[in-house]
Image (cartoon, rainbow over all chains, first blue to last red; front, side, top):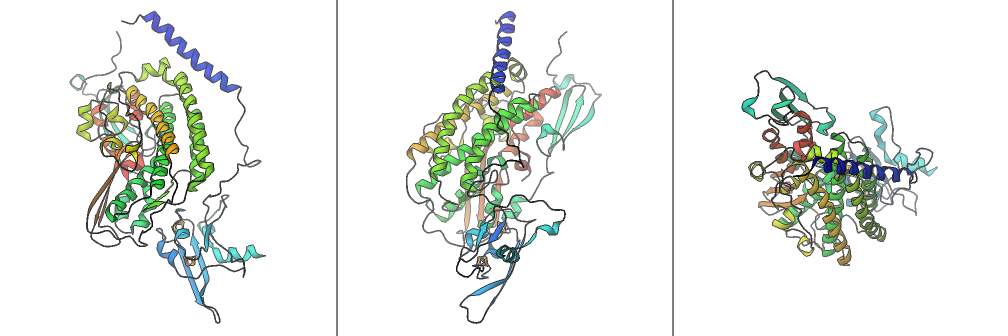
Length: 147
Length: 376
Ligand code: SF4
Ligand code: SF4
């Protein structure tokens, strides 16, 4: 049989020990980062929405419009169209649309691409007032980035 | 006269009323609804009503290719994503006879155990929140943040990792991750002592959990409860031991078992499991072999030979098993997901009968339910 007085004392001591932990924590440095005034460093493999990769030689997209990514995407959010231009060995994309509202950032498209024409962007500040704001035209993004 | 903490069913009055717990109640951690028939403060009957976040994961598995279904597996139980992906890739690898390189298996074990710790930390914080203690959540999330940062560094995501591939891994781990994980295991052990001083030994917690919500081993077997729930009822059932998979047989670790069957027992099992996970991680880091992280011959389009395949893992909440029935197409004929939370919830109706409402909430918290896992 535990004596009730012993239990009260032990119980009280447990509260004091717990309080000690709290008080020690009180004097530790503050770790909260005051976003947006400061932000944390992003990791290298961060997955933002997908983006086309530029061919360093031509400045154009590396995409050959093979549609592998379109097929691999579990959520059906990619739509690619392409043509074969005269004098070129491969097709090139004329239209590359992503419906980011459905994208689960799974990365299947990035992995499947034979020419490594897709990458994850590092864009995380995403806020919009309409659904349409997330129907991304990746080719246009690539071109506007050009300027 | 003291107030009884429990009233047997025969002694209940006929004057009951119905109380809805959820689907928007913070203590149900998501959208679980429990229809409570109350006799005053005591529960005459608690009827769980799941299904509010049913997303047809099994059906989705049957209308898309194996590779397309893979991202889904980390979204069933979002706190235990690594284990779930492991079960699915394991089932496919077993069926297609793909041999996974040792380095990939070791990294799978490391990341799975990290995931287990982070899942238990969320449970720890949320459970104590249910009991009315806010602060421990902040400590737990501080530690969990370190795991999330580590895993984000290699997988690119913080919760729905989807890091394993058929035959290996999405990519190799880097030196930063290995060093970070070492630092983490060294950092975490003293933190657990701190948790003990702050929470586990706390008299209020003890009084609220000890001998509350007893679940017998018999009841666990009856409903198929697994994981910390059955281990808190004195049965050393752990898939990592019973049906060894991956490289788990190469590590030394104990299966924490507490025979009491009350909420405190389940609490202690999970706290002890964190220690064991740290042990496994340390051993895996010591033995981590060099080499590729992807099997050489993995077909681009996976097509399984006709048959019935099953693969079970020990997820943070218990046994998670994937069963795939293939009829030689690139889309499975049937994908069955055996979710631990569903079975663990099933015993709630019987276990909570006659309990006081606040105690029944402690019982629910101690089951560590994840609602998307129940509904799938
Ligand atoms: S990341 Fe996944 S869901 Fe998003 S576009 Fe690529 S394949 Fe589709
Ligand atoms: S898989 Fe690559 S090359 Fe093919 S369409 Fe998609 S982005 Fe273009």
